[in-house]
Figure 1 (cartoon, rainbow, N blue to C red):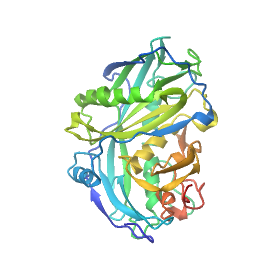
Figure 2: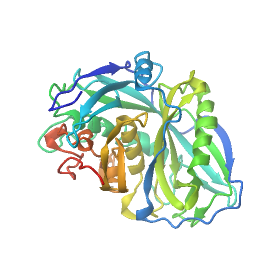
Figure 3: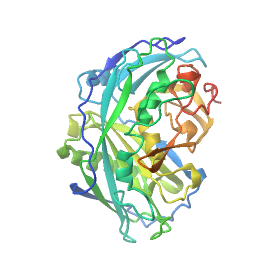
Length: 396
């Protein structure tokens, strides 16, 4: 339990094998299709205010104890579980994060499987292909994700502390627990990316904004899409060696999602989990992120920012089951929310990194301690760039 700077917990899982990254050239292609049964709905006019991220629940979730047991048996991703006493209300909150124990100095490498979703809207013939760079882009989304800050080290310092040159998610985890009594600086949560295949997807009767232009944006119903991911795409990836010990991330290019109606647009990413029959019923985590170059959302969203949001949230809340005291009225959250989703409180607050001459954007993320009013962060920070000066207050 975390209280007054003290951390006690159990390690779940062993280090995963490292998978080599690759380019998109010559990759196997797998295909699928999905259709809206009714007429094509009117497209939603996007704006910065409509850029959002979703949390899709883990249906029929396994207990935390069962997930910890599976992680120790290396049949799911490597995780570590503990609990924290919240400063807001004195209540105890269990949690599970990816990787190992920050007290033990565990260094874990987790496999992230990038799957570019090459989407064709059949009504117009427009193609949104993450493996290509168009409209003056310096790099394709598929290549950019693997070459960018989520999988490559940047920066050495955070304020007065030197946390080390790290990948973006590794920074999130190290900065979150840096000030906990007993923190071991050998602690790392590293990601190793690979790209085994490209998924070609034909979609019918779904709307677009500005089709055929550099500002084009496709829109797909998120529930139809998620059913396709769980029931068709992930089982199909099993033949490529992708299983519940991996974290597949499905990358779209200027394709976003709406919930039920285009009035509820635009979701740029989400992460979730389900019990995968292709992996023997084990919990399979996965994420979706749009690499946006459309410009339709203004300065609040750019290139890699959605991916950094979702990968960071997966790392801190892989099974979407980490409850927190109620917080809100910040970022994309106009009301109250009560989960450990580190991107939502700062949606639209971007930072940048340059690698090999290419400029990437990441989203600032809230640190673990912010949610529990627990000063566990590096330099006493509550968010990665010190935007939050105090912990979250109870929302009403």
